[in-house]
Amino acid sequence: MKLFTTPIMTTMAFLCLGIPHAHGQQKTLKELIVGTWVLDSVYDQTQDGKKNDTWGPGVKGIAIFDATDCMSVQIIAADRRSSKIVCDSAPERGTK
Image 1 (spheres, rainbow, N blue to C red):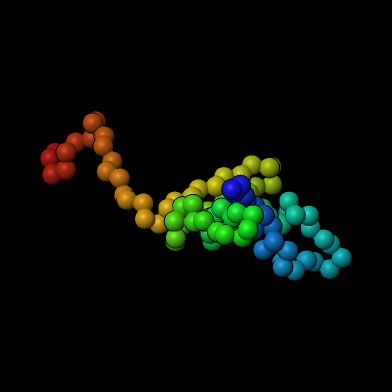
Image 2: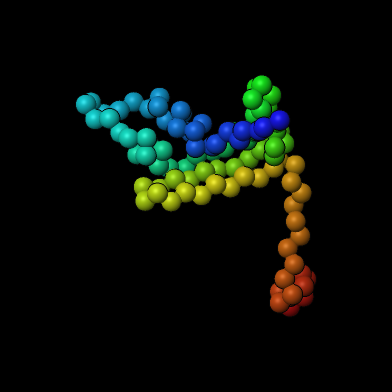
């Protein structure tokens, strides 16, 4: 069975289409998508329409697009356990 990943950018592009334009000036999709976006969902979808939550329910994240064609996407599973930070050079808590 072949899975198709739904790209975040496609979803955001469709959301941008509803933004009103200045009179007589139409912005390109590239201009409309510039900014920071909150991730709503991430899933794989099979050809028969079945959705699989790759990152689990309640996934969190952001996508950042700038005008110079750079982008960044961070995705975090909702059930991710916090990790303990270990730094050998830091003093122990409660000591001076």
